[in-house]
Image: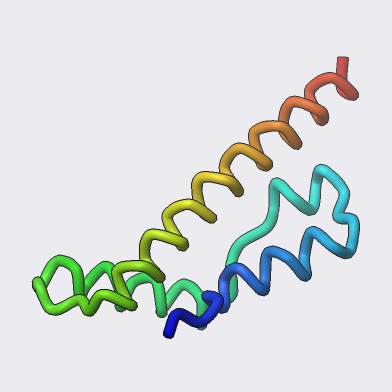
Length: 83
């Protein structure tokens, strides 16, 4: 059974609080969420990743992609404000 990754809950809570563009650009996942991602990557590289872990890693990769897009848009907004 797949459980929502800790990183997903952190991002949802962060975005639900209506962060400013500056806060979005500065956002980083918690140490615990980062360590989990690194553990999943290590398991993948070692060839010992389970099916559930693979699904979790895929979700984390998608979340990372989405946060990069959100941060890029926040940067764009900040540049517009500065000009």
